Image (cartoon, rainbow, N blue to C red; front, top):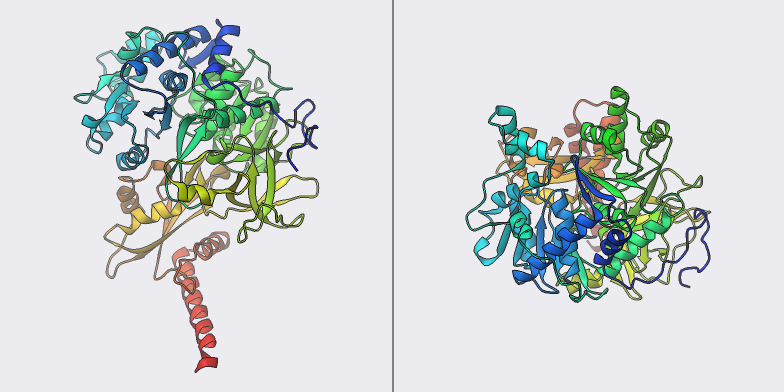
Length: 598
């Protein structure tokens, strides 16, 4: 049975069960907003404003600039930018001519970005000056068209003047935001400023063409590029707009763009949903509670997407500053479960509501949502989005037709127009991801309650989620295992502040060696993003392993948790004892299995 044609149970009044099929590419969302609300502020970047008419014109120039340097439909354009107006312009310009936007984290290590570029093979790279400078020794720029972005050019005129002052504070600010241009790298800002606009009758891409590549470890932890089409991304955006249709008004809302645009959650809500609503969007280059509150005084938020730690810090700082957050009608929390106390504090302080959603990059990204109504259920993943089918199946026998009984734990699979086209040039992983009939495997375990709400049971992939980012233990372990002092390592996540998880490395050192947390972080930051660096370490004698020699991360995590809860002084001793117990159990089991054959 497909998606029901009537309103589903628990949906807020007026929310449809099915959205209309997508017939236009992503760039048309901006065209529509600019036509209907040309003078409305589209972007507010640290106080500098851009109207929808101005944004559409800038995109038309950037699209023609891309075309003139040889970018054609189907070509990959690498983008390495923080949240800034140029990021919005580059994305919509590439989508306008049918190019594919490959998003990269501007703060990621050069080695990681190089590997991602090698996966997608793009020959055009547009990035923040500081990111380009970091990459210059790791990537062969001679084989590419590389353009740098000066984000200070998007600041208000007074701020630019202050940055140019010959004083220490201004120099420090410039060093944080700018870097000297690398030889052979051209200015993207100048290129766009000098470009004419693209012809109005220039052909549009097909809705089934790939629009964006986002990197993920998927269900295996191995980095891959997820192919999201115009249909995938716009469908999911339309689902979100339908979800909020009875609460949000076209041309009346103020969004906050704090989530990274290079992340699926931020891309969907900030680059697409905000534009789809012709909302004014306050764009911040990084998250800071004080920066949010300063902007709030200038342009109060009505819609705030974030992750648990953001909501927690904003409320705490707002209480200290006596700030008024009552303008916010809706907050959407994703990437990690929202602690009940964080949700309650936010709702008490704003008098608005906070809802949770669930998804993954491969689903553009949202699959389930809590209704924007009194029926919302804190802690639950929610109910299926419009046009989305959900089943829970046996993860060890992944047949879409064999659902687990009501109330039992199963792996979430989903089907809908937001399901990705697969992994870029990786058919084997794509076949493992998408089951017959178009069902997407999530790798996450959940159960369906009696009233059809889905509740997470476990994270089968063993991902660690911190600040809304997915951290793959295998990747962190590979980096730490290369340390000269480290013999072996297991990386797990322990509950941290406001729903975040803290990365903890359980380490076995080589004979005669010692290691400290400071040494581990100094080593790891060469190859890992800051959010993936271990926050704690436990030095062990050995790691618990299964009969086939696989490290039992689950045992490590359980013992670390038990040690924390019991207030034991040495988690290392506790886990080490767990390792010995596990090894003894394995030896005993093997011995018992051999006896009948002796």
